Amino acid sequence: MGVESRLVEAMLAPEPRLPVDVAGTTQASAASTEPVEDLRRLGEALKARTEDVVSGMVLRTTQSGHALDDMVEDSFARVGTVSTVAVARWMAGESPEVAREVGRESWHIFGQLAAQRAAPLNEVTKRCLRWCDAAEDVVRETAAQLDLSREVLAQALSMLQRSLNVTLVRMCESFEAERRLADEQLAHRQEELAFMATHDSLTGLPNRTLIVDRVEQMLARARRSQTPVAALFVDLDNFKSINDTLGHGVGDELLQAVAVRLDSVVRATDGLGRLGGDEFVVIAEELSLAAGPELIAERLLEALKQPFTLGEPDDATSLIVTASVGIAAGDRALAGDLLRDADIAMYRAKLDGKNRYVMFESGMQDAAQRRMELEMDLRVALKNDEFFLVYQPTFDLRDMSPTGVEALIRWDSQTRGVVQPDDFIPLLEETGLITEIGKWVLEQACRQGAAWREAGYEIGMAVNVSARQLDTDQLIADIEGALSASGLAPEALTIEITETTLMRNAEETARRLVTIKELGVRIAIDDFGTGYSSLAHLQQFPVDALKIDRSFISGLTDNHEGETFIHTLVQLGKDLSIETLAEGIEQPQELTVLQGEQCDSGQGFLFARPLDVDAAEAFLRNWAENITPALAQAPQHT
Image 1 (cartoon, helix red, strand yellow):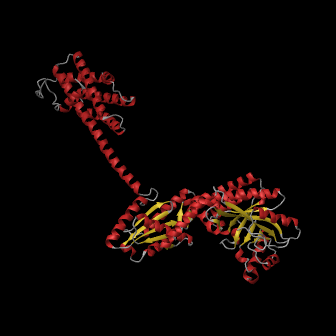
Image 2: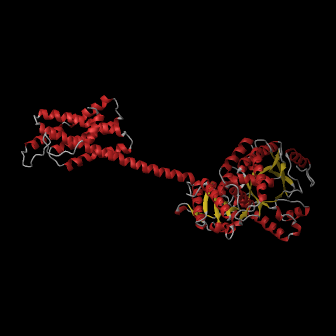
Image 3: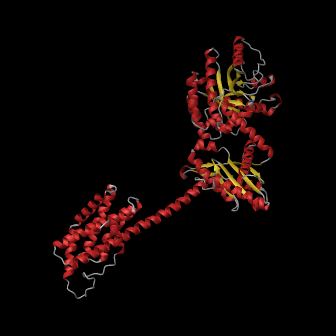
């Protein structure tokens, strides 16, 4: 009989009524116990031949030519063993409950096979039927050997059939339970995927996809009901510096904390989302805008004023974070237009000083377009060799001998002509391009400084370093590389850092400056007096020189407060063995005051404007050839 036919027969088999005679009539309870004893003997013999049953089952599978993985077949063999022992114990007189308890192991194996998708349902069913066939063969053979009656054999086969039925039902239940579980997991996974497709994985907020969809719906409602709508673009200020200095783990924790803060002040009827990076957006309509979107912006900025405590409790970091908010209100053709205008207004807020909000105005789009075009030109300027350096000499104010030059970057754009530094350097900082271009400046300046020293001009080379460069240890590697490639002596290089940059992350800055100082490089604080550092703070940094900001030098003869400041600063430098250098000297009277205060060095248009390479070399040559050079207006580069 084939396996498929046996499957149908097994499913249709009637419940056994035990004991049963060949004719199918129930025996009286007082009947002879001889058949019961014979059935017990048959059960014990079947148990002893369990291996024969399993071998027969395995042989049938081998002959079918559809064997599965060895581990799976081993599981089926174990099911055959357990099932044979269970039915044998039942025949031997133990209760069906005992046999059923023994058989639980096989049901557990079925559950594992179903959970692991190790075997399809039809193959499992075939193994069950092959076990029954093998067990029937052994039962018949054993009954013949024991010379048992047809009545006992029929009863044993009925019990075997019943065991098969129960086994098949349990097996189907296991697979059905697993199917339901798989369906539930699939449905849950689909829900997760749908959520992931429309929400930010870090903060759980709606992402750009969902926000754009909600803005489209909001605009449609606004057109129907003639109600106001607005989008507020929120961008954290100086977030990249936090990532670079404290690590991305702290940065991610901050973004999560910011999301919670912002969500706490956004009305339930409005929407908050994260568009990516450190950019969030709030969308509002109807009643939320009754007092104007500016009130929402003020609430958002107020929510960020309290410090954020990040990191582990035993090593927590406290941060104060600000944001720039751009607001776009009113109907737009598309959701993207409203978000774009809010983005443009946000950039204007950053340009205006950050930590504020700005309403979008039509003229801003043109400004944003110009800024984007400027950024695109900057991104190809280095590859197109459009940058060049000019050099402004510095002098020892005691004998008016040149001590060095300061390298300054200029941009001669192929499409714009010469672009003033104030028009492109802030954009280099904002976009991060300053890191790559700053490295180029270091390399070019060191190469030129080495060439001049080799030509006999014993001067130093000063290079400005941006806040972005000082945010990572890459600056140290860039300085080492520039010195190594050029051959410039480390003591001939001065790195200039603004006072504000110095105090952004004092601890990390001090560590990097110490490492740079260990290379032999000099450190100067640029624009001193315009930042927030105290004299006590200066002592934690390895500073060689203070460059007094030009705002204190201008009109020095008529500015008694400035003269007092110069006097105090020069005396401080002498006490701390720090060189003082005055910037922006333009009038002879200013020079006289500085010399009277014994300021060490200076630079300014009174001596020379920034010069290109040829003009700077001619200037140095003229000073070398004249023992007492006169103050002169040097050629300027335009």
